Structures are given as C-alpha cells and as structure tokens.
Image 1 (cartoon, rainbow, N blue to C red):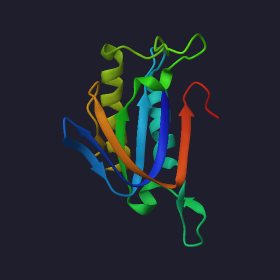
Image 2: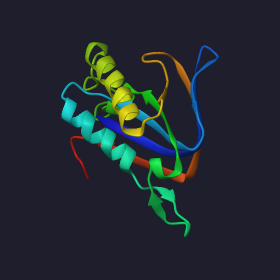
Image 3: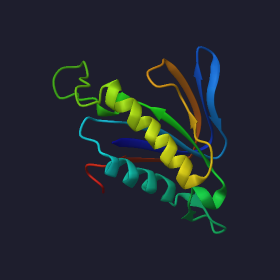
Length: 150
C-alpha cells in the first residue's frame, strides 16, 4: 500500500457536484492498493497514519498526533499512486490492484481507521471522478509505502 498524507486545515471531496466527504483540521490521505498488499500491510499503515506526530505543540514543534488535536481523516482511493513511468510518457498502472481486491482493502482501511480513531472517516467514492480540494497546512506532506517502511 502507498499513502500520501497531507496535514490540512480543511479538505473535501466532490463527486458530480455533491460533497461526499469533508473535514476540518486533520489528514487528507490518498491511498493506493497493489496486488501484493496484505491485512498486515493495512494494519501497519493504519497505525502509522494515526500515530504520526506532525501537529504543532505549545512550542510550535511537531509533537502531536491526530488524536491529540481532535483531527479527522478524509480517505481517498487513488490507484495512480502505483504509476510506473519508466517507459515512455504514458504511465502504466499494472501494479495497482484491480477493484475486486482494492475495494475490500479500501473499505477495510476505513473500518480500521474508524476503530483506531473512534471517529467517522470521511471518504471519496471508489472509482469515481472525484474533485478533491484541500488547504495543506505547513505544507506537510508525507509518503508511506508499506513495502519500504522507511
């Protein structure tokens, strides 16, 4: 799995002009699933996302996690995180999981994040043409790949 995590002061997702998910302060997370991903990858990533200490404390240092500031998560599925651009100019998405694997993993990630945070997770719509808006706070953007774990 790959995730792009952005610390935001607000974020929203629209499909066909309708808001499907909206948050204030928290994380806007783009999530990509590949065929090799497992439940263990999902659990590890969920813990990593919710445990990231990238919110400012009273001294302005990044020492607080999502729970410490009462933040929310907007989770958006994004198969393009597995784009391969080695050959030519048209990206290949062969590593991205097909919907029969990706949808259950995305739905499991929603449930896992809800269980960890004890909050409703805002979402986009899997496979839809989404319009995502956000105000990146900082900016703070972190990428995580469960196969690399650095």
